[in-house]
Image (cartoon, rainbow, N blue to C red; front, side):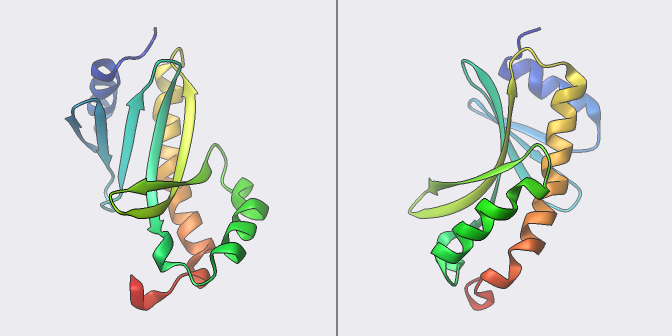
Length: 133
């Protein structure tokens, strides 16, 4: 089955553990901790992403970037990149998978990303300016 926005939303809703909503082509999935993941069905792959923190909150951007390159593999199935959201750059955790992935794999990706967000935030907490939070 090749996933499209409507079938992904249906799968995530039926899973029952998360609050799921749709705005345009973006599915928002909120876990019980209030963390939002955004799911997109592209032409070639599914993307699941969670904004972690704004770049403006980082004490030393170069040091954090180096730390991420050395440590992001601690969290399986997830990577980190920077993305402009509105007027700010954000560090974003994401996972990508095939449009032909099985339903269990899609659910695992979303669940794993939620787990990894906690790991990333804990791992990089000392690199963030708490007053800017």
